[in-house]
Length: 283
Image 1: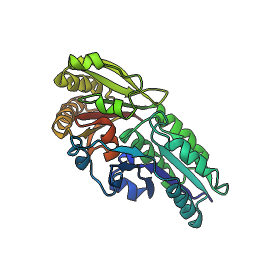
Image 2: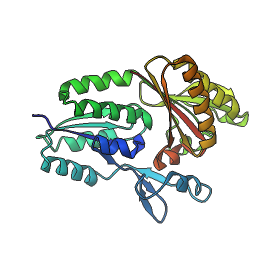
Image 3: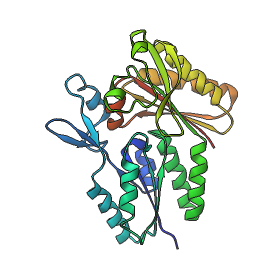
Image 4: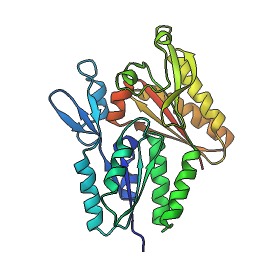
């Protein structure tokens, strides 16, 4: 009989109830300051990162390989036969490659290391849907096929106050706009097929960027659409977008709109303050 473990990383922004419900193992990234180091989402909160950015911008690092080995050792002792790991886009991080290498050291466990080509609640949706399948004892090979299908139904959009932090962290992808920033042009950013950021549209000013996010959300709402909103030190703005989309959803009597709070501290390091994000999942 298959015993399937579910792994993700801290950038998935999973809620505690989903972690507990589906027994998810979360690998925390590291946030590194000059004189100290934190585990993402474990011993540092998002606001602590944002409120200290004017003093020091930390760097981030993968979970240690030792930690990945410890997770597999523990799963092996518990008698797990299979692992499904859904991870931050390989276009944004090396965690997919790192865990893929570690998994090869455990031939007794059949592993499916999946590149989400997404981030935040984009990852989380894939983890949650996988958890549902595991609890209904869906075969491992079927779950693998389903995850591929789920990813095709997933879109992520966000806007940031400044591109400074994406540039600093090397996560800028195909997004550009140094001159545009001087003109207060705000790009609407998404994640492409290559797992890297790209510009969907450009508008002038924060107010117009939020309106554009709302317009995109409205255009995506259908009967089975799930829209999830999150923020990076922009609660007021994300609340506004949530209320507008929630109202529209109720008028249409279609879809579900959720507001799930802050992105992980390590994501905040790379986005900077002022992020409003939206995940669209059409199941």
